[in-house]
Length: 322
Image 1: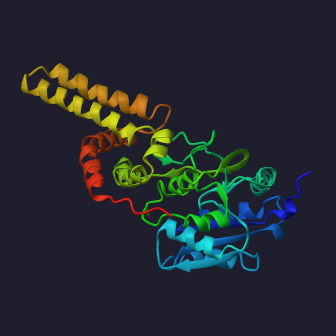
Image 2: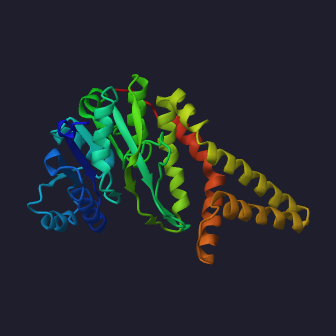
Image 3: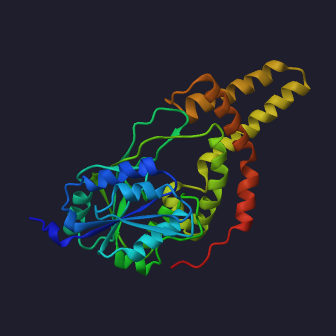
């Protein structure tokens, strides 16, 4: 018999100008089957985010602690939450996620069963089929998503928490776990600690955001080259493949135009559209305008990718790890 009364959990929720989503997230946390005496909820937002006031008023007298810091970045918000957490286990989710009712109970069970582990990553899922919607998933483990994992506070303090040089809300969650794995700590995956991540609508130029994310990949790779290769293969593998194809297609288009063999150019253009629609985004649904926008913006992304990764490789410096 597992004594869950021994496991107390601090839940940290960073938020940023999403009061509607935040309210639903907090309602899901308060609906946990886990005893409310065994967990606390800490919401950390940006001090310029006035939308938090309405949410804080709605949950008044429900025991949720609201904080505001001067930084808009999620890594700093999570670290602030860690510093304020009063319990031995710190769990993280995001302000656009819906933990299922057994989420905290399942996390606690795993910590009680396997006292040697440093943390737990949970099952994250979504029902996204739309082309211009985004939501991460973690159905088999080793994805290390900060919307659904928990760690011993002592170990979080030992490794210095989240690296505050990422900012983008991309790869900083993996960096945290890599610091633990490098020190020999174990992270267990729980199939039953479930969080639903609702799909979020994206702008038509969304593929261009991948170019900004390259910086985070370069930083993570430079800090943990062995662990990065084990988990993701070579640096930015997917974008490298797409970029090689994009430049080959561009060469074919140019060659066909210069030699007035337009069927070659047309074939190359159709090949790009085919790869984008039936390979890169297979199974997604979108209207004609969305598909045209995606083909254009993602193809442009693929073409300029080499310049971005070269720039970040030269300019990004991996500082000493905690």
